[in-house]
Length: 253
Ligand SMILES: Nc1ncnc2c1ncn2[C@@H]1O[C@H](COP(=O)(O)OP(=O)(O)O)[C@@H](O)[C@H]1O
Ligand SMILES: [Mg+2]
Image (cartoon, rainbow, N blue to C red; front, top):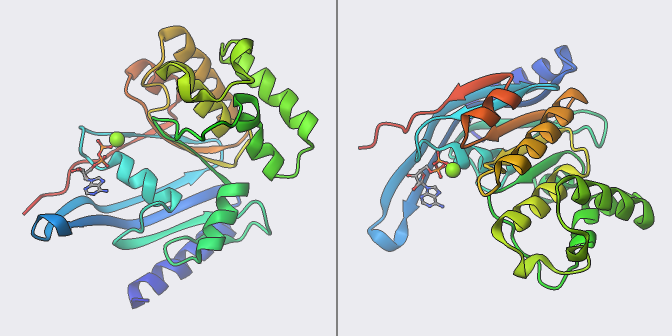
């Protein structure tokens, strides 16, 4: 580990113990991709992004296409390993200590995903042949909620998102884009995670369902979730944001 990382981590530990509402601290995040198949060309997607998020906050990432918004969310979720900087997340599923995910073991990242961090991407990664109701209930079951209770809560959330009941016993593979997206959102929001990462969850929805999703996000925020999100329409941004963070594409050489 580089000495700068150790310094940042000690600072982060203090920040988390001084501020009980702090859920996430990202400091000096950069991400570069090397395209090995294309002569080793390097793409700098993010440079020196720092961000603190507290419970009850919804930080909306803004900036042009290609600014690195999705890349930042993937770094925060631990899908991408940041090239520089450090990311710490409070482990509310354990003793509430911060876990530095940029250096954590995969099993620690998986524990955080089960108990702390929810992620909704723009597209459902379809899990073949799992019925919709079970797919939505699964994050609750993984957190120890009894199956009948988890199924009842999944049904209520699917109804609120206007997913027709006749679809609940079916796998979402054949659903329309908007139906799949609402299943995806239900699965991401059901467990009441303390930190939510939302990458354009409303992109394929009509205005009515966009409103339902915006209401669900505001409710999550008001019950104390910390949220980082990307939203393609200004109306949703205005409803959910407590703060905006503008990203710009790094200077490319
Ligand atoms: N897996 C990857 N491999 C190579 N380049 C990537 C990868 N993911 C993202 N990028 C590049 O990083 C830059 C930022 O992309 P992205 O984070 O998707 O932007 P945004 O979400 O703001 O539109 C783009 O130039 C994109 O091509
Ligand atoms: Mg994106």
